[in-house]
Image 1 (cartoon, rainbow, N blue to C red):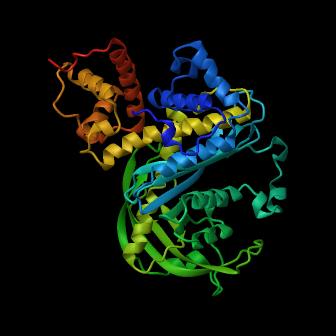
Image 2 (cartoon, rainbow, N blue to C red):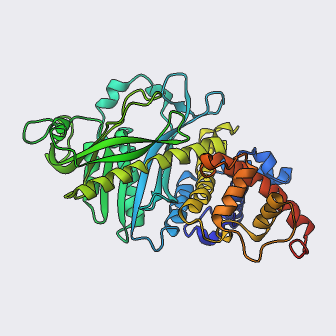
Image 3 (cartoon, one colour):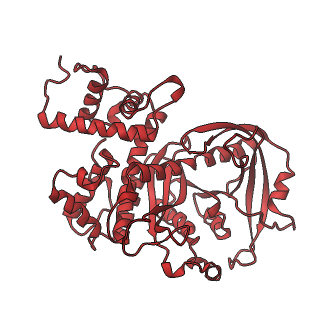
Length: 455
């Protein structure tokens, strides 16, 4: 994996060039040795201590790290006219860590940090960049006060994070490209739909409510009455979220005008949207608790069956942010950090997230563009030692291997069997295999094997 530089972060500003250099070093260490503890990532105690000091440094603020993520992400969207922005909240758990300032999670026992991430994805489903992220903690003193939260203004509710995230992406990316924001049921918020009426912005979310319509009926009752426009095959994650299984589903859609909820104080009394229903018609799989039934709402103009089916396909890419969280937690082991302050942990989550996205990009780029040269993702030293490890010989091919070949070889080093029925290597096999390459590449560079590959 190629090293990143300050040129990749146009808005990088920690007040001292040495902090910027340490920031880049940490990301490179995480990217090349995911899942390895901070002491093991560093060559000596000085670098280990400097890494811990970076996360504790008051001059390295959460705002400066968030700005760095945005600037780095936006630089990766050049030459793109339209992009899908997938948003989600993840709980980063530190139940057993006695760190000061942690908040509660799903229950009174859980402790940790909440993280809202936004990743950019191509229309074909290739992860392009992490473009926005912010973290927060739920104050322990507010635990059990759900009734009080319902009385708060929208800007003071936790659900406001969805609105804030979409608005920040719109502001920082601007109107230079079309943005289609995609989110799960937590984002079915009346105020949120009006984000989609700004320039170059649309919303596509999974619905959580059977809302009232202006004609006096209920939203999903009306859609259910429509004829199916098509039966499609969908690839849905299995129970463990590792593989995808094909199911058959019917698709319906209808233009609707939704009334403002009675408790909402939004200035507009209604909003016009397209409602799309995706209902599984094939037999329920053994591990499924319920058949698939997606109910989608979008500001996109849907006037043909093809446009409705395109929305369905785009929504299936929401699974990618689940894979991003998987790499962040299981790959970089961010939940195993031993920092003693919640703010230090929040800083680390942002830095670890950049590395997680780099690992994810490497895997998915190989699937989207398998014939490209592997030198897009690997240095000469990395693909050289990879070739030698796999083929057990030092003579190199006249041209670098393709990305597809390189990722399959890396996956093999990480335990992927490579049988025809196995499909391409998964994220875990790649990050494990990549660690082996980096260990070998370090020896290659240390001993300067100038004649390797010359016969």
